[in-house]
Amino acid sequence: MNTIDKTQPNEIEKDLAYTAELSVHEAQAVTIITSEDYTFASQLLIEHKKRIKAIKDYWDQPKSAAKLAHQALCDKEKAMLAPFTQAETIIKGAMVIYQRKVDDERRLAEREARRIQQEEAERLMAKSIQAEESGDTTRANVLMA
Image (tube, rainbow, N blue to C red):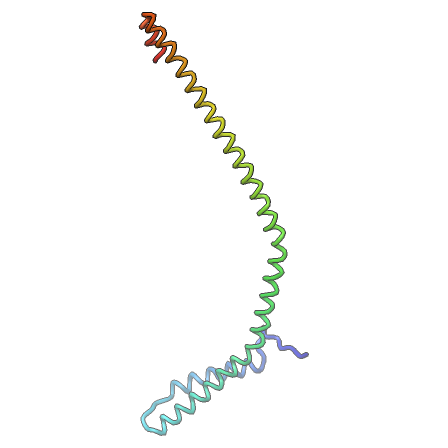
């Protein structure tokens, strides 16, 4: 199979580039005053459309090959990344489990601290009431502070 190196301009590309420049000069020279001028301009457009098609046809195969190559590279990259993506998911899952455990332990400790604080407040309240009932208002006030 004979492949054409599309990275360096070859004779076909040089010819297409030349005709592209020529097309611009031809278009700039067009003035339509008569029906013959209009017909000439129509023929010129037909020729330009043919040149455009030739350029698109010329680049069609290398663009398709590049697209396939790009897709193949993306597929290989995805395959190589898959184990790391899976590992990341596993690690993040373990981290979430640990964080939940830590949060649960923290909430439990906070709940226990509130319970102990409540019991201490109730104990001091009971002593304060007992001190007040026995007539020791000073001690009752100190216990309530």
